[in-house]
Amino acid sequence: MKRARRVKAAPRNQEWLLTLLPVFPLVLLVVRLWYASRQDTQTLLLLLQSISPLGLLSVALLTALWVVPALVLVCKVLGTLYWISARRSSWLVRAAERLPGWVVILAVLVGLFSWQLRFLPTLMMLALAAGGLMVRDRFPHHEELRTAFCYALPTMVAILAYVALWPAVAAALAAYDVATVLLLTLPPGTAILLTGPVPEAPARMLTHGIAVALAVFAPFLVGVSVMRAPILPLTALQVEENGSPRVLVGYLVASDDQMFTVLGRDGAVSFISNGMLQSRVLCPDPGEVPRTPVNLHGWYVEQNVASWLAPTRPVLAPDPRCRGRSVSDPETRGGAPGRHEGAGQGGATGGRQGR
Image (cartoon, rainbow, N blue to C red; front, side, top):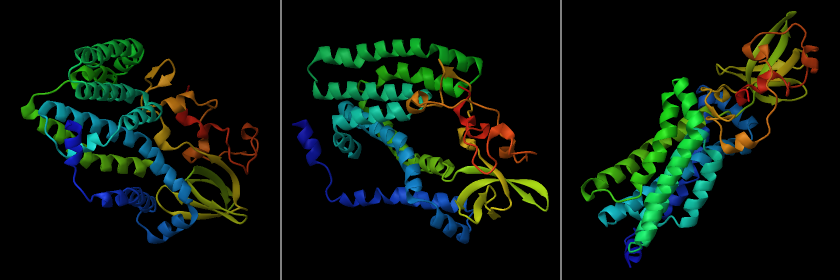
């Protein structure tokens, strides 16, 4: 009965909101290219001509893998928490009501494989809170179920999480990594506080305030992630000019049987003739460089489950060409041919954190 009244109170004629879903990623991709071209129209047109649309969409897809689960879980938790606290309908309650259980479970599974290790305790907190609130809402007269899902299960999972994460917490304390310590220790103990009602007076301000803040700042966070995401391979090319070698580090836009087109880090476009090219090597993206050495049995806190389980390549010394330094004899360096990308050379493996 309560559920029927909440659905009936939903506003009508909001299908136009669905048309905005594909517009936002498209705008982000165009802005990403505009940012990469340093606001130069001709460079932007060159990038649009050379870059595959599938590569652009992959950037938005990889960003959505961690954004969508967070939005789904936070909306479900805040909407249900406000309903059981105030028993009043609102736009947040209606949004949570429209998220079925299988969508919440799917969001948890996607987040489990796409979120970094340091964010998995937060994912666990949101999943336990969503489950406990759904049990409290749907079975208000079953005291045993509320005790099991709202108190016993979060407490047991928190104890197991602290035991499992203690090596990483200790490593973060030793490295003075305060952010990682907070991300690994606060969420497990906070989950039990989110499975019950809050006082009715501050309930709306608390739940709707967090939801509005998330709705305001989420596009900016997504935009920052898209702006930093690589859309072209970072390549170092050693060329010969006037008898002396020179290294050009930039993003490879296109290549054919006559020349290479390279977008420099400063936004300048260079056209390199094949006759001038001595060697080239694939370099690691600066965003892949690890920022903390904290790990849990070889699983670094900046890695997700998918990247941790994936096979890795051996880590070699960084290639000097990726730092803008030429090599005297690229033909014999590491036994790799000079005119092919150094797929096994150290510049392309620097982002896996020395596992």
